[in-house]
Image 1 (cartoon, one colour):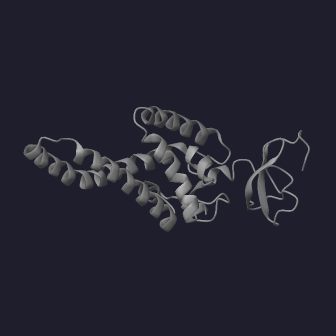
Image 2 (cartoon, rainbow, N blue to C red):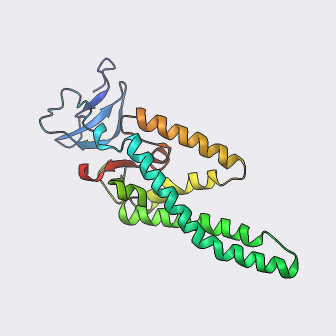
Image 3 (cartoon, rainbow, N blue to C red):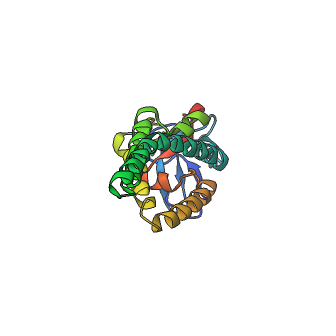
Length: 206
């Protein structure tokens, strides 16, 4: 298909496997071939079918809230002993802050490692697994994704948002973009999905 007058939607693309559709944005194909909905012959767009496979804004916000709660609990387990040790050391030698700084760095590294491992091993963060979402490769079907894919989804943004001062501002911008893009993108891709080339799909629609 090369006719720009054809409206955007999901169609069967020449050369793709039989029984699949791909998104046509009005000028070119985007994404990977996906199984066509029942009864879809490929001549008309599969309006709404594939989009409904991907996690909606509300569900993903709920998953993110659960992830934050769990992450805070893990951070407390890691930081309390280090902060307590810092208080004791400060009482004896007059130094302060080392334990807190170490705790912050260790908690961040642990968060990144746990997130990458969970995505690569189970196909999602705790919040996403609880609400029935799975992170996939770009095809919207392969889950859990490869280790490299999981790392690319997590590490770049984790590094950016942990930069002093600017990281807080970056986190706000990323949050806003995630909400806007998940709500408007045909495949509901967030900032994380675009960097890692992933998709977030309802488990029962894989």
